[in-house]
Length: 317
Ligand code: ACO
Image 1 (cartoon, rainbow, N blue to C red):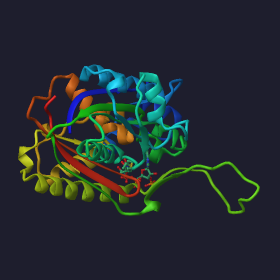
Image 2 (image 1 turned 180 degrees about the vertical axis):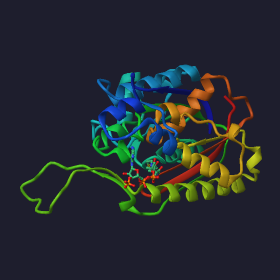
Image 3 (image 1 turned 120 degrees about the vertical axis):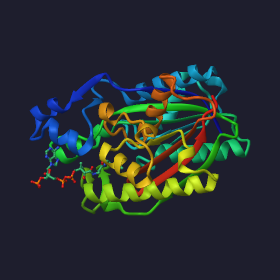
């Protein structure tokens, strides 16, 4: 795999911590201190698929290829207005592609899983150009009366175009079933036959357990991919970690022993955008001209499941 283009898009409405403090019992100081989040972009009248299509088109433009050259679209998504068809299929129509399309749901780890799938398709020769993307609206899963979850999230989409190449040095994905720690349950349509009790439960999270598991998984995943690639932690130019919150990222950084300049972050302005956070951050670095040929990037993410994953990829656009 070689990354040849990136793109991102986010909703226009900015919500500050002060805005939230007028809606619920919270404060800028509490949110900043516990999470590092100052603002987030939230969906209002936008459709998630519009953001996804915008990110996809920007990635195609950056790659300098047309949508018709895509052989596959893989989109990581947890919730969207459409349960079916997939976000990927909707994006296909918006950008004018004509190829197989699929969504995958591995929670906040979905983008790493999508990379793993894409690499397999490239290696078997089934595809030459793949749009690997993530589009997420976690603000639609939370209870906006629950201050312990709703302050954490923002919405957005990130995308990259990949082709065949030698860039992916190592990838690891895993899942250890632990549903109760982090889940969102929606109510399905009733039928004349269903007799069980069914609830709609907005995002439920055991915050401290998620924190501990996230740190442990990220540190061990990063060690594993470094070892598989035969690299030292200092060989990595940038660590792009799932932007869950500043304290988790800082803990991982300390446990891992890398300097702050190697860990770019945008969680302060975008909040936690679930699996879209890594491709959105990657696009930010690319647009700002911070990536050079030969840079080694480590991605690491963790989320409901409990899933986690990491990979190392050389930037050679
Ligand atoms: N404003 C003010 N007070 C709050 C807020 C808020 N927004 N939210 C919770 N509190 C209160 C609680 O009610 C509690 O009050 P009490 O002591 O009177 O009962 C107090 O603050 C402490 O609550 P805790 O939940 O113990 O706070 P904690 O220090 O654990 O911080 C946090 C909560 C920020 C969620 C932390 O546990 C955390 O970062 N967890 C990681 C979870 C995460 O980031 N998940 C991301 C989503 S999942 C993913 O992306 C993988």
